[in-house]
Length: 179
Ligand SMILES: C[S@@+](CC[C@H](N)C(=O)[O-])C[C@H]1O[C@@H](n2cnc3c(N)ncnc32)[C@H](O)[C@@H]1O
Image 1: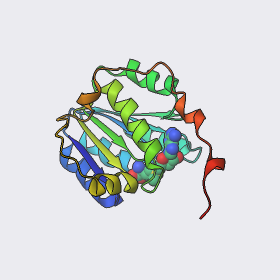
Image 2: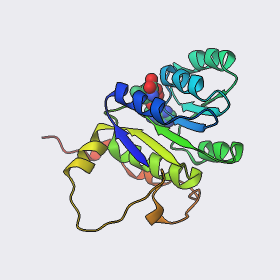
Image 3: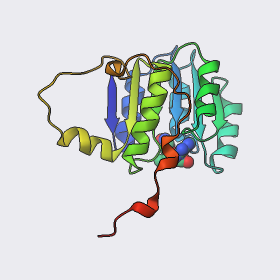
Image 4: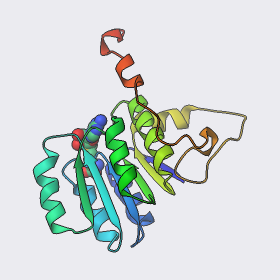
């Protein structure tokens, strides 16, 4: 199952309704841990790995790690291969992948991060918070039925961790057309 939201309250409600006590959760873009705390309280016998690349996140997340034994925080850029590899090596399974790089953040980067992490972790359920992806899904039509039951795209096969994520270097904001 893949759930997309934009409103942070809907994102949090969706998470709270699907989480189970034993779940292993990976949260991309935890910021200062407001949603991480909700997750940690629900998964009392599980584990949360929360990641963010903002310096602001570090002291707040360190406090949260001291408060909840089931949280691990990694300060890093989730677009990087090494960061994904570190998480893959730490966990045997992922029940829930939760992606919030900012609700209005570039849908292309958000999708890329989702696709690569989900292909590697094979989560049962993925939640993504992004306005542009909702717009795309709601504005699209197709005659073909290709869909996945889990939190990753089964149609894309068993690709595992991609060798290196080079695409991110190929795009430049200098190419943006001004209206
Ligand atoms: C809207 S905030 C997340 C809010 C949080 N999920 C919550 O519910 O309170 C988005 C976060 O994504 C993080 N972020 C954006 N791009 C990132 C990247 N490439 N790697 C890691 N974190 C990233 C930002 O630093 C920011 O803290």
